Image 1 (cartoon, helix red, strand yellow):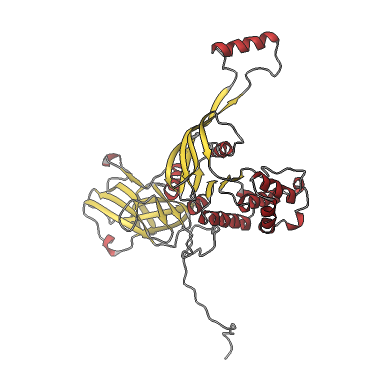
Image 2 (tube, one colour):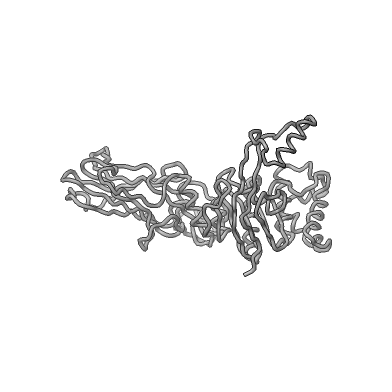
Length: 427
């Protein structure tokens, strides 16, 4: 397989502050030069920040790579180095193929030129012939939705018009490698949907895509692989589903499993204590992420310490900071007091119920004292997992590529009757 992007030990250092005044005396200039020659340069006048530090990866031709991380992690700097906007401090980056890039709104556009002229200018920069650009022009303008403004200088465009035309140019002038930063947030929901669809089409036709985004669903859906950057370093590299789940869980502070080895330190009271909790798939394996169409289990292992009132396992499921639902096992097996010993209860959440995104779970064991519940233990956000939709059209989202709002997204049964609606009151 041909390597389209080859990055080895790439580093970029920025200096915050000034070494000296813009205009100094001859004595200061000579002193500064001598310090540099002798290696005794005074460095207290600035602070060094490494935006990238020893970044190494290879991207094969025809694959889509997502880059994620917190603000300031080095994502945009990486793309600027790859597009030669910024010079690296160390390492090397080699790109094999014609590159189309969209890093910031209007990058590469001349404000005094019209939209049409900028399309031809960008095509020429990419090495395309004028006839090729002319053939693509109707498709570009239709996608961007700025047909009536193509002969207007782009300095008069709104930010939305700017980004629509910029993305359309970058995506339609047949780049072999497309580099896209988090600019799609400028467009409206319909435009974002079309952009993601276009990027997916490019990936399906063998083009190479490197996509920086805070939209975790888009990363999981469009990219086969993802990099997680933190303070300029790659801390995770693997399948996009796993990297996205790890990032979201790290941000939330909860993983997919948790164990308390010392029962005396475990959550609980003198009746029941929690031993472990984990997210499981149908085959019993621990799950960091799950397909939205598949069931997922919350396994709670606990110990009953003495004879006492009946206890019942319970979970609280939280999505997007809101309670999605509470659930407990209402089977009669919990209606009688449980003798001392170890117990494992698993709550199964059906597929096509939870919406995409990060889900956290509060496991608990309670006694029922109607109308109240007495909690023997309840651990807030003890575990988490990521729900993702592979976008294959058979989930409750169907062929829609956007994001449903809400904490649940059930697949309901629908009926259809052909013909005109009938008045139920008529006889």
